[in-house]
Each structure stands twice: as structure tokens, then as C-alpha cells.
Image (cartoon, rainbow, N blue to C red):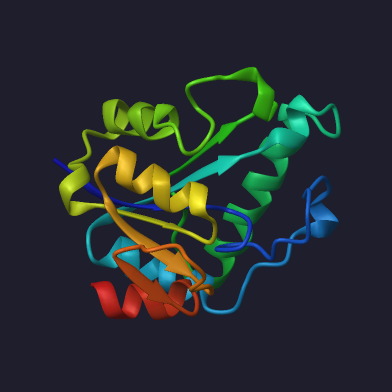
Length: 168
């Protein structure tokens, strides 16, 4: 069985500036390519799990989100020589009551089937309560980036690079 780092996209890999709808909006955060390289070098999968409700709100399309994800992966590869294994995203509006919108586990369930992942040895890293709730619901270890607030994850770090350096 494989182990994985499940990563939220905006706020963890890419600067969260609201709805990312254009390639020009991509701003890879400092240390991310190095963190993805370490994840891969240590035998983990790097898998993005992201709500993209801008699609359900008719603010963008699935094709554009896929192009943005591909560009993020291209930039990470150019800096580190490794790629994110897969991007999963929920395109639905929050009112759609789908099974894939975080904190529901639909996207992680797909990844587990596709990659044979042991969730007990995996991490969900995000910057919002829905990310931590998803990790709990999926029974991964939970990691909160950049905030403390009232959210109680298993671990809290300043950024992805610091999290990876301390967890593996």
C-alpha cells in the first residue's frame, strides 16, 4: 500500500487570492517545489484535493481549472524535477450536496481506489477547517498551515516546507 500527502491547492501550494481563474493568477508559494520533492523522495504520493466551486458558480470551467493545475505542476517540475501525482477537484457549488466537496471524503476515496493508499500513514494538509475535517473524516493525520484559531489539527506549521521537514 502507498502513503500520501493530500494537499489543499490554494493556500498550501499556490497563493490563495480568492478564486484562481487564470494562469496569470498562479503564484507558487516559497518552498513548495522543495517540499514536493522531499515528499516524493521519501516514498509518499503528492495528491492535491481541492474544492473549486468557481466552476459551479459559473466563474470558470473545468478545462481552465485543469490548465491551471497543469501549469502549477509544470512549474513545480521545472524547479524540482518532480510532479504532483494527481489533482482531484470538486467542481460543485456548495449547495449541490455532492459527496466530493470537502469535508466529505469523495476525492480521497477516489485517490485511495486509484493509488491503493493506506490512510493511517497519510496526511491531509490544508489551511481551512474543511481540510482538517476532511482529514479526520478520512482518518488521516491532519496538518494545519499558517493558522491556529480554534481548529485543532494533529500538527500546525507555518508552511508546507516546514511541515514536510518536520513530519518525514
